[in-house]
Amino acid sequence: MSLRGLRLALPLAVALMVTLFVAPGSALASPNTSVSAVQAQVDRLQTEAAAAAEAANGARVRLSALQHTLAGVQGQRAKEGAALGALKNNLGQIAANAYKDNGLGPGIQLLFAKNPTEYLASASQLEAVTKSQSVQLRKFAASEQHFHQTSLVVGDRVKLVRATQKELAASSALAQSKLADVERLLNSLKASERKKYLAAQAARARSSKKSSLKSAKLATRVSGRGGIALRFALQQIGKPYIFGAAGPRAWDCSGLTMMAYAHAGVSLPHSSQAQIHYGRRVSLGNLQPGDLVFFFRGISHVGIYLGHGLIVDAPHPGRNVQVDRLNYMPFAGAVRL
Image 1 (spheres, rainbow, N blue to C red):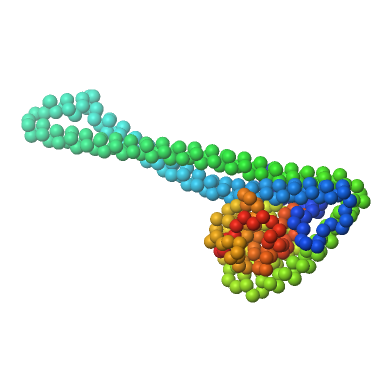
Image 2 (cartoon, one colour):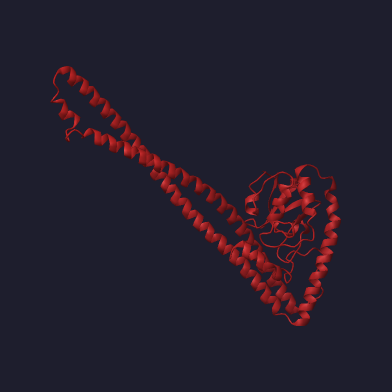
């Protein structure tokens, strides 16, 4: 399924999702053992679904770059093919001229020259023809070699494009299957358990939004590009997470950071795996508000550092854009743009 199809399929599932990262003091309201067991499985599935979605984002970015490169190489091959054809025609013309006049080559024709002057003039002409032919042959050989090399590059790029297309489809399908597993788990709850479960989720969303809006005031004095991006991201608090979304009504993690920095004049790809390669790397101890912060091994999540050990991010399915604790997820790196 394409990410567009995945995006359309999510709104119904999103209402049933639960949180993966619970802020301190906001635990579920005394669910029974069955609900707790389901919660643990849902947490795992949501982590896997978000990671698969970010893998799909990364594959899409790489696919776009590969397709652009492939188009350029294919254009180069077309030009080289045309040049090769022209050289081949030139060689054909030289060969035809060399064997015209009743099939006698220039060397044989010289034997029938009427006088030495004519012979020498004809010999000079033959030498010029031979040199011209030699030059054309060398050009043809070089052109043929370049064309062959370019064709090999085209073949390699085509293979990479196909492999990346498969990776994109597989990652999107995996994310979708994880959401289906979550829905089946939630459907396995008894009606009373499900009611408590959803009520707790609604209460958590309200509490998260309230505390996030309070924390957002920390960004008022942050300057520069980071400040602009940070304030844009904080304005999205309360909007839902949806795979592949880049606003204005919904976001995924890298879609939020991409658009936040776009408002600050910085162009980023829609992929946490790609965004970590932009800007200057900074350590955990040197973080400043506005820095992009990345999480999990393999990079499957990104947010913007707010300061005071907090980040703003679009966490995962079932959660809204909010302010989270930096140390609630395994830190994987940070960059300053």
